[in-house]
Length: 264
Image: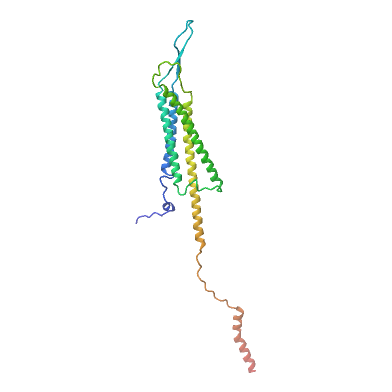
């Protein structure tokens, strides 16, 4: 005979939708977010290593043989740092929009909503999770904004000498050392803070589900014990009086004694 598998509670429970925070889609998106942040960090390091530098040359001398007018030339056209910084800028922006958009969609469509089910009088753990989520959210967008601004500054500077970069000029504008590196650090910090925000929201969802399960169990128990089953009717048998029973047993012996005395 074929073996039958026992049905457990996990089999009866509804499967997790693909849009939930704890689904495979959400975990894959977080992994891609971290990998994209690492890739943006590497691109920023490449832009820092290949950024344009300036060399100053003396264009003429005066009558005394002293140096006169100085002109500057760039060390390169700036195409490599420009492409690297532009890729990091677009990649970080796209992954942040996708990741936060997915989190917002998953939270608003979770039954019930995770962040709206907690009221101010709830437990301390719920309040701490709210503060953690708020801190992660604000810090993520601050780091994202700073990193994007630094990359935008680098893009504007490097794009100013794509043509005629080898021609001497009286003034040359270059980006300061460490700007691209700082942008890479902020980009990497942004994705890790976004991952922390995701984990906080996932923990909040699990706590909300646990609370909902406890409420359901309490309601089921209340309905079960509200109308208890009636006990079967028991027939009561009256208890016999032992004194009365003993007096009934003694009546024949008393009658025999009376008859004996009457014969005498």
